[in-house]
Length: 397
Image 1 (cartoon, rainbow, N blue to C red):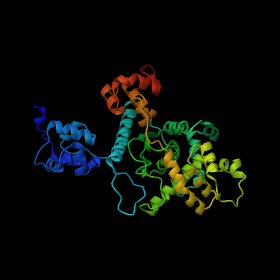
Image 2: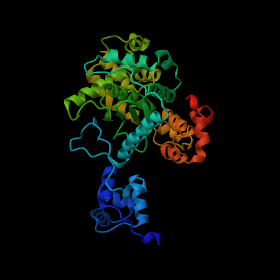
Image 3: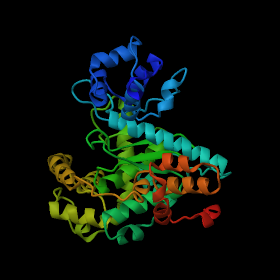
């Protein structure tokens, strides 16, 4: 019977797959529903799982079944630079959920690179690069200009979701893949970036509030322009090295300068009429400014501090309360996302259109489409409609 058939896999592959997925022995055993001692025996090669158990292992580790029959483990991507704030104790390794999202981002980028080559498309190039010695007040407006998003357009968006989609579309139009991570806690990761060119990638956390994701987009884009990607929580203190701290401060200031242009902010009536000697701001005033620019109140206060319109003491005093209010505004639960919308949400319009173009030009199979977009093929017509592409116009994308 199938349940009793043993899977003669190399024990090294079982150990590699668990470790690469970010699970401890105990965590993996619980998910696979076996005792840790039994899993340890499989990894030591003293016993073997059944075919049914191997299928469960593949499901838990998010690996195709065939990978467990290779001669050697496949080459993994390089570990990402970690800019996240250190706790008072040694930091925990990335959770399996975050590990999966990082791995998925690398895989999607590789798929996109292959499709560009197969389709004979020219790779887009970054408009410019940055150095940590550059002036954030110059770099920020330079980014806005490169993304072709004038301030008038930003101020006309009706809400923060429209704003997020517009910034995301602008980045994709510039040749940057933009993905959204799912099921990862915001306290673990706000965003990360893969800075390799061509086709660098930015990943933001879908659990974050839209205004937070907007700031993360610009923060990570700055990392891409610096050529130093990695995992971020946008903190500026308690980092591993002084260089990391410099990088995070720089990326935050560039993002703020792009989202809240100096002159536009200082010329607002609510700012212009505020006496220079007054370093305090009401929550209502901060929220009013934040709403106009579709950013968080904390980002506004940080920007006012940079521009000398508030004090360090007031910023530190109000920051914790503003961050708490911001966290409460983040989506606690998302409603049902239709299968036709999920690929666009997580993988992005640029990636979805590229996959569809590859399919219609017979560069990839229908099975590839289902795998790359994580959907069933019966949803393809609605995905085409949502992405704005069909077989008849695929050659003109």
